[in-house]
Image (cartoon, rainbow, N blue to C red; front, side, top):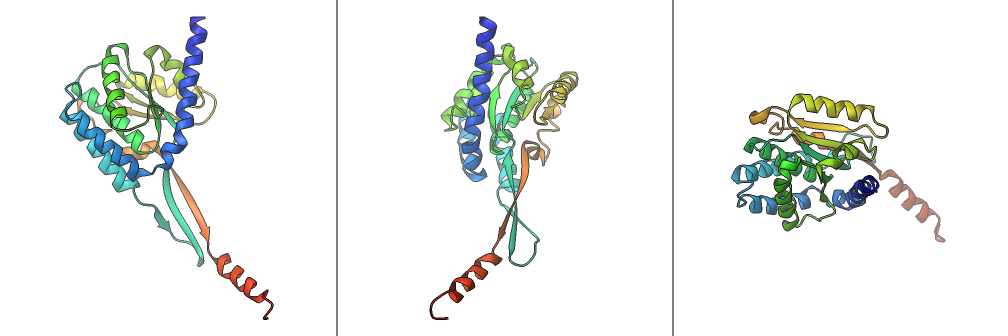
Length: 245
């Protein structure tokens, strides 16, 4: 019965995150950045996170606005407008190995802020030893105005079931290379959509999460085509169809 309840609880977390994804993604980068800016103010004063964590979230916000803030016009034939824009991938799971170093905290904050700014929803499933950190992260994110359905928390015991779900778009992981490789194998052998593993495995160097284009790991690119040729054509047809002609 306990196992069955865990399965139901895990599935509810996934379904809730997926239901919240569309509205969160539709808010746009600028609106999401405003909420992350509020989060930066809050966590900079939070003893469990600290000023450096706030700087990390602030950096990800800057990169999101710079790289994702504007839709880009693409070349096309006369009378056609082609736009390139980004969207979140869906639901990401945030995981980490059992470490309390400040660099680990900063990397997790980098993952959380980049994933949210990109338009994804999250389930945090940190190790048991980091449940206090997870509690602080959830509370401060919700206090900043990010909806509770957009960022949820789970126990470490639910991590495997979450990752194995074909509905999950990816995993944001902080830790060692061996664990990252294990996660990657799990994601590559499961059914469903191709999942993304975004891993910070460089320790205190934070080489991946501070990369200028790190945030692009959390998005998909989309194109929008608007054909305006027909507008003028239809207007002429309407005019020619009038009784005066």
